Length: 440
Image (cartoon, rainbow, N blue to C red; front, side):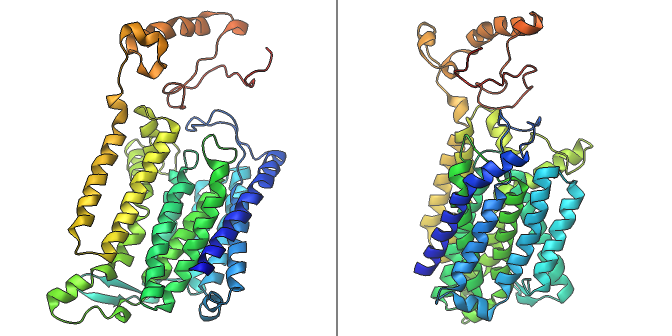
């Protein structure tokens, strides 16, 4: 555990220290795209944060290779090299996309090629634990198709959820933490050496996200861009593939005894099949809903819009920070709830705790519907979100009319969004680019 924590801290430190210079490099090279209709931020923000994250990955693997207890991962398995090869390719495509806006089909092809590179070097699914059947060995073709599909789905799920400051990095960090605990338990508790690579990948992934988050929290100073979102998505998928398709459930020897006892004891064995899906449950649900929504509207599945889950949270009245924290909460509940069930599957307290926390999450989700309204005599002393809508509408009618009907040089920019905190809705036609406090 000490060596894993050292690798995590070094990865986080390198990522954190490099993000500042990378931000200056992104500004100097013009990697600051204009604000798009679906964006939430109000000012152009540099991207290319994935550069710092990639060098954090390289540093983490290099440090682990020189640690006595982790060096065996590189000697007994080719998976770290396979991960680095696929990550380098997908990162390079992401950097080009952050700068030149590549076509979606080109990125999709690069994702498949990156997955294929990892498969060629041995990072692939060899078998699957199927409830009621047992361990099913896969052919080479089946394993390759399943591996590529899992990599592509995970990368795009993480990429789709990267819409708010700190959202993707935080959710992936939570997922990596849950996965690390489960993989470490298999490696240390059951002495399964095949789980060591997945444990290392999860620790490095946590370090990358933790090092980048201080620069990416609202208001973000830099975005990870596709170079970062596709990179962490690929590492998350590689961890899932390593432990799902490489660890043979039969080595746990939980299928002894009667049929009922064997079935009950084997429940934790099937968690490797379920946990990779639960840790990306929120991003995957967002991905599926986006594809259905766009196809239903006659659009391309790759067409960008503002119908993602985080956009909906902003639209119903949540602030930027609260929307991110709500997504964190649900991701942690699903991932760590599944992890706790894998450890104590017979405990009813775990089920009750998950149900209770789900109820708390629903209350937090609907919190804007229960916002208190101040009495009319106190409306001038409270923030606008606590005033009555009629008063707000009356107060905003005059500025809007002046902005639309007045001369061009006297028009007032109309702020967009809910309580001025988001970009949901129509954008201002006249954007004031001056910073606060500058003379007119």
